Image (cartoon, rainbow, N blue to C red):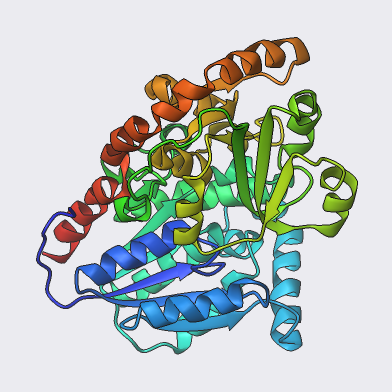
Length: 412
């Protein structure tokens, strides 16, 4: 159960440069705030894609939340052009003014300008501003300064390690170095991201940095049903918002082809047609399911034996040190985790050795490891309920307590 804290009626602003459908971490935080009777305003963006319908469902669920949507797509051509031009111009100027906070805010995302426009017109008083995603960080700081109220940052990824653009890397690094010491707290989604950020900050701010893992609530993962058939194929699963190139699938599928008669693989997400035609269609051991709401997805996961966590740490530095929603969903579902060897996933499975294994895509090494997994199929299934039970201690119901502690101190 969540810690029972009492707060007076407070008003919190949550900023995200996407929306709650695309940002499960932000959604969990909004639910936690509303559960404690805190008035929440969410400013997010219409993306004019599959999330639009899901946002309607979330608004029906979160009736006490005030939703404000902006549009950063070409649907509103005038504002899109201005925001895009401002961001591009900032990128051109930034190399000459690399310590300019205002420029840095515009470099990291065109949403920053739209949020700034809104904040200047807004007259509502907020007791705390929480910013998710770099394009919202500068606005949170400016609004907090104008209202004389604290702001907080959430760092889900190591943002200076995401982009290939040196200008964007330097801008977001400067933004974090300047803002994190001034934030009331900063939450992080992985131990290695917290560690790397602390090294990057030139001040001792460790007391302001908290780890809040990307886990989910216990109720989204019901009790594991008894194993019915011990002799079916090993059932693998992988999910993402999009099923496409550069997600790690191409590399492992060529290895799994040798075991097509011993496995099934279910892919869950919005399938890119060209990827399906070129990579998936001819592989008959693969089943495809469309994207589904988070709770339905988590229920669905429990039908499988093992989950694939296919992060590629060579793409960028962030991929090497992040822990995704995916690996936490597998853990809490009780699935056996088959993880590629990024630094974060290696550490994760060292800490949870009975929950999975790190594998190599080297052909000989992969075959040796995968044959061991196939021979352990029955044990993997029989221990799923135990793994599911053990994972409850890492659920959001437990991890969210660190945020509740911070809010209680801020609101007292």
